[in-house]
Every structure is written in structure tokens, then in C-alpha cells.
Amino acid sequence: MSFHDFSVAKINGESQALSSYRGQVLLVVNTASACGFTPQYAGLEELWRVYRDQGLVVLGFPSNDFGSQEPGGEAEIQTFCSRNYDVTFPLFSKVKTKAGSGQSALYAYLTAQKGAPQWNFHKYLIDKEGQVLGAFPSRISPEDPKLRAAIEQALAHA
Image (tube, rainbow, N blue to C red; front, side, top):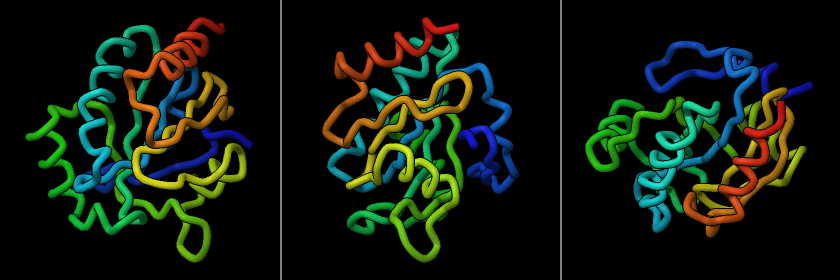
């Protein structure tokens, strides 16, 4: 099984097969609009702009699991991200990331691979074949040299 075996709903409600990202490095992030880490949207957008031509895609999964910090609906989330952080990387419909009833199948897979998010803006790095390379907690910002080195290493692998 790999990340590419899942399908999810995009923020506009359309279904998205994650196999469409085969051959690209992915940074999967559970996001929230009213969190102390929300300014990381700017750094995530910068990562997307800097590395997308090399094969990185940032994928944002809004979640209301931690502190009820993502209470809005999809349209509200998309407007917030666009207006405040000029987000252009792909966003998906809200998901439940915490283990238990209602947890998204994708997050059940990610959690089984590299542990569960402890808060918003937890990041999973996925290789070109859909395998989870690592996880980075919320306190690791998009600008952190460790995260950038891991992204660059994943991009360098054929």
C-alpha cells in the first residue's frame, strides 16, 4: 500500500486520486485557519513556489481536530487562505486526522506509517513512489533547514 492508493475530496468537493501525484515528492500538512501555527501557510506557499518546478507538491488538509481551530466550511477556508496567504498549492476538504471514529483513511495510513499529528501543521514527507519518508511536528516550520534538506534529498532521488 502507498499514499497513491487513496482518493480524497478536493476543497471544491471534486474527487482526487492521489495516484495523480506519482513521481512527485509530497509534503502533506494538516492545516487550520485560527492556530498559532497558521502563519506557516506563508512558508508552505514559499516551499511550493521554490520547489514545484523540481517536483514538490504541498498538499493542505484542513482539520478541526486540535483546539477547534478550523471551524469554517470549505469555501471559507479557501477564501481565508487565498486572501491572507496567497495560497495556490492544492487544498482538500476538511478531514479528521485524529485516530478513532471518523478518522480519514488517508490519515489512518499516515499515522500507521510515521505517527499521529499532535497538533495543526504536522507535516508528512512522501517520496515519488508514495512511501512516507518522515514526519515533522508543528514546531518545525517550512523554513527549517532540516525540513528543506529532507525535501531536497527526496527530490534528488530518481
